[in-house]
Image 1 (cartoon, rainbow, N blue to C red):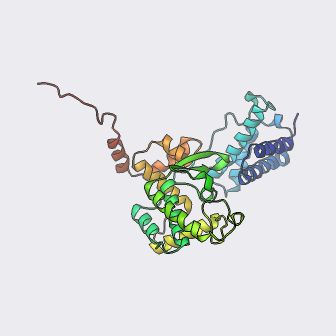
Image 2 (spheres, helix red, strand yellow):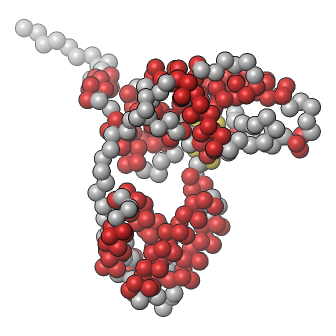
Image 3 (cartoon, rainbow, N blue to C red):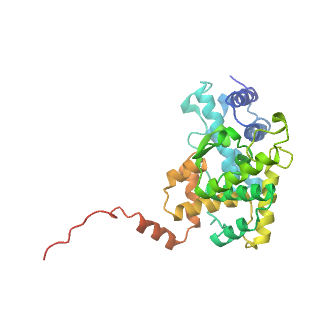
Length: 314
């Protein structure tokens, strides 16, 4: 018999060995220790072999009784438990048929329509910058990156010089997953301008004084997520964006996804560009499309487009 707390520690060490980012590991540990507290203190179970699907269902009921957690939040907790118990199966601490999460289904989530920027707002936000200084050009390029690639703020901050090549950028995403995003023509134009100003800005600094990140502040130090948020919010305010749009970097990601879908991209390709682990996560962006948008996409990608169909003779 194996103690739950020992296996949680084992899981943590394995996640760190696998190179998972600290924030992700810390979140997993928070969720697992909270579950462990319920299982041990509430149900008196200390060995993992004794945990059943009934105990998991009781934990779900306990989280629901708190009243402050949405079904989506509880599902996120279940996702961590599923990863944990699958690890125990893979490491042969328990058998597959004894996995208590094997038949546990997610709770139904409220399907919210995602409200994001429109094209006119995006144009006004980006054009709010005058390109007069190093910071102006850098901030404009940051906004272009957010809207044109859909990358997360944390991913943008973590781009290193070596990650940028002629036609694409290597992105270090969630869970230590890597992916490539394209460099569009408009991105390339402003990247050249930014890189030139960046060289001029820091030419008098020693090499070791300039951090090896693509986006740098005035002191040649990596930008923070809070700084990215501040840049976006400032220009959203100036551009008079609608109040129902939160104006966060994640809203830029929503805009990117919905615009790509309107332009006819398939959900699988979009998932790859956004760094999602499965297409179910990406498909939620379809809910933000109007029926006319969906019909237009269908027309553009009709299976018979381009085929030669002969008229029947009469």
